[in-house]
Length: 412
Ligand SMILES: *Cc1c(COP(=O)(O)O)cnc(C)c1O
Image 1 (cartoon, rainbow, N blue to C red):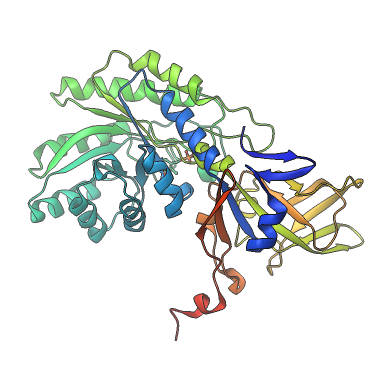
Image 2: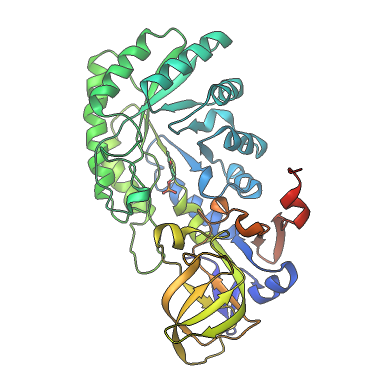
C-alpha cells in the first residue's frame, strides 16, 4: 500500500496531481511520498516492539538528506557503507550511537571518520579490516566496537547480483574464519566485539532464508558465549522484499513475529537494516513521452527518463510497473519503453502491454524510491533528475535538478 493512487481518474501523489508536479518541476522527476515513508518505517519498526531493537535504515537505498531527516526524526538509526553516507547521516541529524557501518572495503580515512563520530559499531568483513580498525582506534586512543559479518551460506533465492550471503559472495566471513576473527578481536586492546552481523541479500520474498540464517547465527552466538564472549547485538541486516509486480513478500509484522519467537528470551538487542522495504514503494519516477516509433519488429515508446536515471531494469532486468499519469483509455499495445541513451540496454520496460500513449504525455514508473536516484549517473551528460517529497499538499524540493553547469563544475 502506498499513497500513489488514482483519484478522479488521475494519478495523485498524496493530495497532489502528478501531472501538475511534472509540469511544475519538469521531468524526469522523482516523487517521494512522506506519508508512505513514515508508514513503512512505522510498520517495520513496530513489528519488533516485543524485542529490544534498533531499526537502522540502509542509507544506500535512498540517501537524499530530506529522506534521511524524515526517518531520523522518527527515531531511525542508519546503516552506512561509506564515509559519504556517514557524512549524510550526520548531516541529517542521526544519533551516531544508532549508526552501523557495513561494507567490505572501508578505507583508513573512513574508519577514522567513523571513530571520530563515535558510531555504534563497525560490521567487519575481513581479518585485515579488523587489524586496520584495531590499529586506527589505538592510534586515536579510542575503542572500536565491532560485529563480524558472518556469511551463513544461505540461498536467499533472489537475483544473483543482490544475493550476498552465499559462499561464493564477497561479503562477510565463513563461520570458522569468523570464530578466529572474534578470538583475534579479544586480543586487540582497542577493539571490543559487541555484535554478530549478517545480511544475506535483497528483495527476499519469504522469511525462510532469514530464519535459516538466524539459526546459524544463534548457534554461533552460543559458541561465542562458551568462549566467554557475550554479544549484545544481533544484526540481521536488511533484505525484506517489496511488490514490484506480483511478488507477495511477507509483511514486516510477519517477519517480526517469526524473529520474536526465536529471540524473545535472549539478552540481546536486535538490529535491522531495511532499505528497499522502507523507500522502494515510497517513490515514483515520472517521465514524459518524447516520441513513439513503430519499427518492423517493435513499437517503441521513447521517454525522457533513461538508464542513467533508473538503472535497475538494465542492470538486473528488474520489473517496474509503468502507467499513464492521466489514463486516456486507449487500447493496449505491446511496447518497449526506452530512454534516449545510446545503449540498446537502455530501457525501463520491455514487451510491456501499455495503453497507446502520445508524445507529451506523462508516465509514472512505480517502486522507484529505492535504488533509483542513488544508482543514477550522468551518463550521456544527462543532468540528474529533480527529487521532490510530497507531504499531503505540500512539496519540498529535496534535490534540485542538475544544470549543464553542474555537469562540468569539477572539470577543466
Ligand atoms: C543493501 C544493504 C541493506 C539493505 O538491503 P535492502 O534489501 O534494501 O533492505 C542492509 N544491509 C547491508 C549490509 C546492505 O548492504
